[in-house]
Image (cartoon, rainbow, N blue to C red; front, side, top):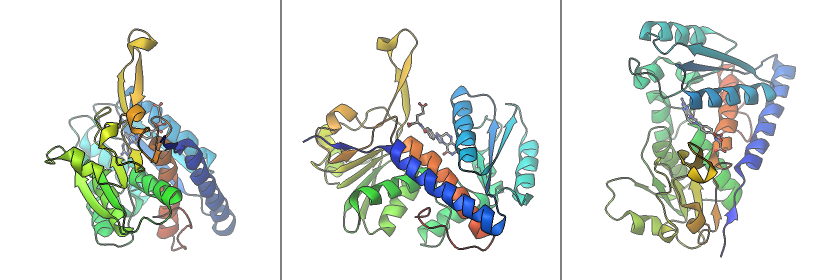
Length: 300
Ligand SMILES: Nc1nc(=O)c2c([nH]1)NC[C@@H]1CN(c3ccc(C(=O)N[C@@H](CCC(=O)O)C(=O)O)cc3)C=[N+]21
């Protein structure tokens, strides 16, 4: 059996079209244009590419896009002054500080400084707690995209065995919470899990989010399982020429696709959904901040 390959680019485009639709309606009916501010500290080349892509996608959806590029030696005080300004700006509904940040800054303290209503990464303690207790939260973009894709692919997730590999605050933990909310039986596996191969083999749904290139081989996958690969790892690709690199996921795609029912590729899988959900979250935040109805099809 060969797996169906889930096209994240196409599904991401569908979400972005829904976003653009809502934006047009908010502008026409409420004179409200959702706005996203992305803050980049330092000059990491990969981050610069992501930030540029986010800006392009935001404008394509008809939203306001603001980019703040700060030097690598930015102080905590200067960054917080900017965050405070964005928190107070009524034309900005989503704030994302691109990670990683330089060493003199603390990611945890940065997240704590952002108004939870504008925390489109869903990283604040407030949003993590709201999600965990089943209340309305801002949900981290990558898990939100994975959940939308899983529902689109499988329909109801109720009663399915789901294994999330990885326990990060950005992906693993919120992913597990979302799957639990959809009535999956959820296991979080990680580097200390006793028999990870056996654990993953039980799963109808596998979400791999560890950041280790091709860590999950095909023989860990239950035949017919739905495999979502969150990993985006850049590895050397000497076959493309000296010094060249390419992207691979946390799943060994070639062996896993022989066993899985459905599988996401890297690139072209979860990555494009993450950006689409960032736009979706910004629209959701704009609606909530202004006391309007929840946008349909853009929340979990
Ligand atoms: N506060 C914060 N929130 C984030 O969500 C966040 C962050 N910081 N820092 C960096 C990571 C990384 N990230 C990606 C999003 C989309 C693609 C994406 O669209 N990737 C394409 C390929 C892009 C390429 O070819 O390089 C794909 O998978 O098809 C990748 C990576 C969000 N991140």
